[in-house]
Length: 234
Length: 97
Image (cartoon, rainbow over all chains, first blue to last red):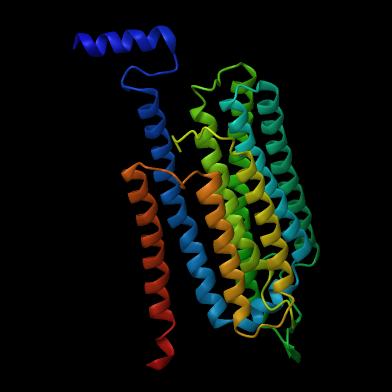
């Protein structure tokens, strides 16, 4: 008892960031990141249901899905993939900067991460705008008159193409919502970093915020080929 | 994740970053080649490789030693597999009846 008290007192004098119900900094950090991993497990199942719906309809209406997929801009989608990958790099660099006590670099990397996140959302906005202009948004004004790739003269069923676009908007929309939440988290991390809260000993919020950001990146890594690249060669 | 390596992780980070960018370009151009039924397989293999790179090196799963964490990650993949495999087993075989 006296031993643990002395440990607590010792920790309190040296590290106010260590909460009193944790024995060590390492235990505190492991508990935090473990909580984030549990949350990410629920997120995998959440997006997994959508991917499952996508796979079923893609199997049923393959040609219609290929025609609809061809109408979205794969180059913009690819650019956005690269933008997200760069943002994941800046996240790990920000954590590395915190670990090695490089405050300026940490702030710059956090700002760059947010800039990449905003770039992603901006490009996404242009994509959505195109879809609204072309009346490819599911609803009463939906119209789709495109040939099935590889089958000249055979037109895609608009009802089936509409299912593709419904999945496209729900999946990319939920992903974009995660990006917006991620930007909020990173704005908060930037503020904390600005106030000097993160040290080589304590930067757990950066690490678990980073886990979330990387997960959102992984979701997009799967969304890109599945939504944008069906039958591009035909 | 609690493993703070002594040597600089920067070469790994930049190497993974380059590999991810190359993978993105590879998916984009592979989709323009006619690989028949293998187009989807190639796209998914590249995507899974990229996802593994992010998870292992950026999310620091490589070198993670906590047993609980390993349990969570493996059960996540297992349950996702159950969701997809059983659904496909249902919808994929309906036309036989």
